[in-house]
Length: 77
Image 1 (cartoon, one colour):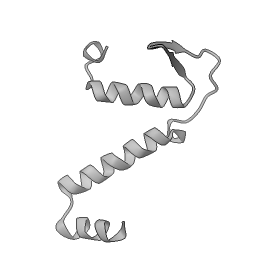
Image 2 (spheres, rainbow, N blue to C red):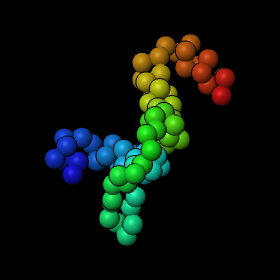
Image 3 (cartoon, rainbow, N blue to C red):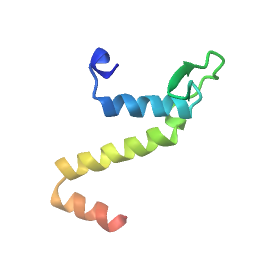
Image 4 (cartoon, rainbow, N blue to C red):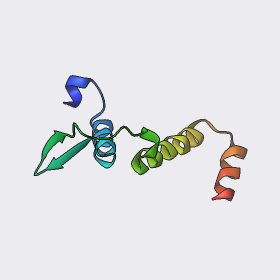
């Protein structure tokens, strides 16, 4: 499926985990089913999404931040 969608497999896994957490799909015995009665929810309400978003920001800081920005971030943790 990841190849068909032309996205990284780990990104597909995370997307499915977010959809499952929000109740848009369910996975039983390896079979994913769409929940047609799922209520509308913002993706920001997903804890998995929030964690992933935070991780991306941290990776961006470590890759592109100045030494001072990285130092300040690490001292605040």
